[in-house]
Image (cartoon, rainbow, N blue to C red; front, top):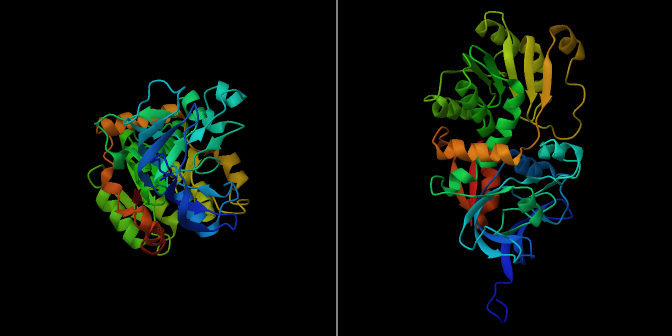
Length: 357
């Protein structure tokens, strides 16, 4: 505490200039006239956080507090902030557009030419406190939370919004056959939304047996899932059998794998739609067979981040219980034990780890 009784240090998980993480005390953030400081309640670990933990990330400006799937309670409010008050619970869509470029004007703020993201260019939520910048308020990226949504659920809003973004391209409809590569949290949410849209068959390709078993159990109330293990089975041949030779209408690579992208092209039916949802670490060329795309008239889509509107949609679906997401939370760790959480993801393939401060 300083001489006025104000907190001046806090615990945070920092990505350093040597591209390694360290848990240490850092200065407590002070709000600017157009920003707020929140007491972080919950921040969940996403696939990008995990890949950064393992490989580093050139897109992150160090030193940086990472973590962007965050929910908190307002602690301090800048004097120019209107409509938000100390004690309000809030969540934030972390990808913040500039509001002025061509993509922002069209409403695709996740495609902003000057995009800045919590946990990348702004300090994130693996800390006791976090500043939400003025640009997030300007762009409508900050949301008050009602008592219909719990902190743990709110921390899962952003990844669900990313799934919503991807599926807006895919136009899944009644009778579609859908294949999803990866049975982690993202893969499971893709499966849930596919069933909501009327998919007739959902097939998941997963090489880790215990992760596949967990996904089957969690998805059982939602719909019948068929599972392929690409280590034991030939994915293309198995898919041909499961679809009666028809192929897949929608293929989603919900994992960081070039082989998944290759197989997604191979298993797709004529005029199929493919989402390259999972980013690939390092070199990512040579996985797409352009002749297959050409002759089968395939549509291949990227998916990056999400817009504020998609985050609001995710909040509504969770609040209305159209999506029940707490079942996907494997474990909750205190910030002091954040390394243990990352190691559990690495060694035990747990579904979703949550950090509670």
